[in-house]
Length: 179
Length: 229
Ligand SMILES: [Cu+2]
Figure 1: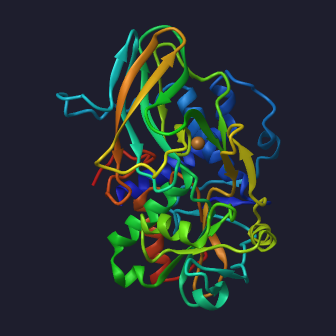
Figure 2: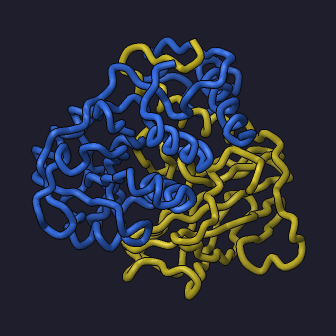
Figure 3: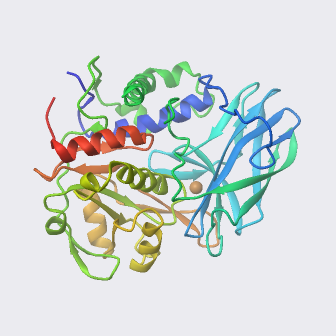
């Protein structure tokens, strides 16, 4: 048997795959380096407040009135919680989690573990912006966000918009090799 | 190849971790209450590299035999129109910010990379789970952001629900996001690959499949078709 054999209605396994990505996040990290080689200008996509550092934030271009924002949140102090996010586009921003095939709101926010990190990425957690009239265009737009943490307080963050037709692979890629 | 390989190893490890690991992680959230925890299927994982990197399913769903409406408003007979093509079918909705665009993007860019010789033998069919918002025009605009060749289908609710049932999915359900009428749609979050020679989906692709894995499987399915073992 050189393959995964799914007995019964095998789709439960898919649920497991998505559960795993959440579990890995919740467990802290698989110590991948932050891949942040260009050390210099971090005017967009990053921000710091207290023990919290946000890196690699970006929104995804959207032709409908909803869009997702992704980022990594690192915590060098005691446990904290990302309580809410607001954005300068759209009618509302929510904290979401994808579990199995459903997207649900994170009631009570996103826990950020002590001396740990949480990555918002496809198939897991994201900030979802609703009611963006005309959608979100790449290049011409940046999204300005305010993130509010229970302990660290509020911080502003600018996220670039990543084009859909670009070849940038989304960071759900679980692989370190880059082409 | 190493990327493909390492994805595989990770995936297998991930599945193994899933069956044990949730406990080991000390699930700081709700612990129990997870309906899937009691219904984990038997999974056997071997050492050899499999022929395909998608998730093999059994029984294999058959390509749905429905006549729906395409993005130009015309009838689209799925069976007739996709006969002889590797058919990647996905049920989703355009107001989906995360899972749906990720799948579409990964497939579109993979087909670009593989070139027309392969891509012209593949049909990508997006069936809406949200016919209320996904008019033919709305789907066309959305699909064109990824690939103008992608086919978008809608239909009456009953047909769309029956199609999902035939694929082994629970029919999509609206989930309100606020009290202003915004909603998400729960839906099957994986892509089914119906092979040209038998119109069965031996393989499905959940989120997290890399483009290397997509490229590997699409190329092999087009060139060699489905092979057991
Ligand atoms: Cu969402």
